[in-house]
Each structure stands twice: as structure tokens, then as C-alpha cells.
Image (cartoon, rainbow, N blue to C red; front, side, top):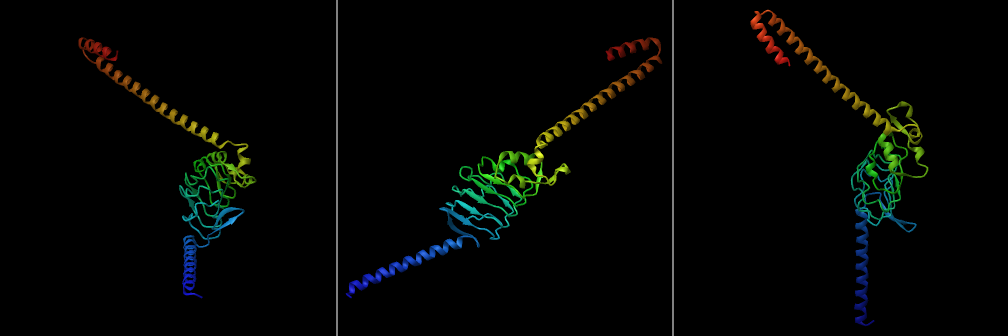
Length: 260
């Protein structure tokens, strides 16, 4: 083999080896960027990122921003902060079930309103969540198997979100101001009870009681003031009677003028 061909073959071989090393280093660097137990894949043509059972205590930060399906189920995540998923504009499905989520900040799902069509928050520790946390979200939401406090706040939340099919029966009252509601499906309870109307009536009654209390105090003060003035006037008149007649007339005229 001519020397020129050997040099060319050696150069091509070295170039291919270098490219292979660079590709391997890139793959290792990408893998190292993901939390332990998390990996990307492709399912039914959709880019998927799985972190199931990865012992996570927070939402990972290095999720590929072209992810379509994100699985964060069966971890130890305790709450969802504001803008937790803002860098995932193409996200279609989000599974957060079987965590320890007890708090969802307003704006936690900011940026997902247009594309997200499935959100699973079942089997967490949600007791009470503001409806603002799900503002403008069009996804089907699963809120079942959480220790809900049944009140006006939950009623407003249920009216705001679009519940996933078959999940409403799993939204059960774990606690309530009325003991007979505990253990019942929330939709069954609100068929007979309007929590927000009850709250409004209670607030109105409290305001009326407060206003009546202030009114009673004002009346009591006026009665006391009038009686006190009458007593002072009576004492003064008795004093005037004890004076000589000329001086008494003068002082009576002065007293009458003062009273008038």
C-alpha cells in the first residue's frame, strides 16, 4: 500500500475515533446531568422523561425542555413552588401522583396552560389548595385520594378545574366543619350543601352582631349622658331653692338659659 494511502487511512481512523470519543463524552455528560433514577425515552412518538421511584424531594431542574410526558410519581416531593415547570412549553402529560405534596403555590403550573392536557395529583397530602394555583389550566386534573378539608375553598377549586374522568368519586371529605360530611364524596356533599353560601351567611350574621353591639353601646352612652345631665340639673335646682329669693331668681334664669 502506498505511503499516501496509509497516511489517509490513518487520518480517517483517528477522526472516527475522535468523533466516537466526543459522542460518548456527550452522552455521559447528559446522563450525569439527570438525577439518579431519571432517564429520557420515547413512547408512542412522544419524548418522555421518567423519574418514577427516584426518591426525589423536589422537582428536578435539568428536565429536557422538549419533554412531552413527565413522570415524577412515587417520590417524596412535599410541595410545588411557583414556576416549577415554566421551562417545559411542550409538556402534554404530568404525573405527580403518590408523592407527599401538601402545598401548591399559585403559579406552579405557569406556562403549561396552552398544551398540558393531563395532570395527576392523586394520592398526595393535599388538604386545601387555592383555585388560583390552577388558573387558566385546561388539563384534565386528578385530585383523588387526598385528605381534603371540605369547605368553600375546595368547592371553588372543584368549580375551577376540569376533573379527570372517573376521579371525582375519589375526592372524599377527610375533615369538615360538619361531622356528618366526613367520609363522604365531596360531589355528593355539595349536591345538598353550598359551603360558600353558608360561609357568606355566617359572615353576614357576624357583621350584624357586631353592628348591633356598637349600636347598643352608643344608645347606652346616650342614656347615661342624659341621666347624668338630669341629675346635675336636679342638684343645681335644689341648690337654687336654698338661696335667698332675689339671688335665686337670678340664678334660675341663668340655669334655664343654660338648659335651653
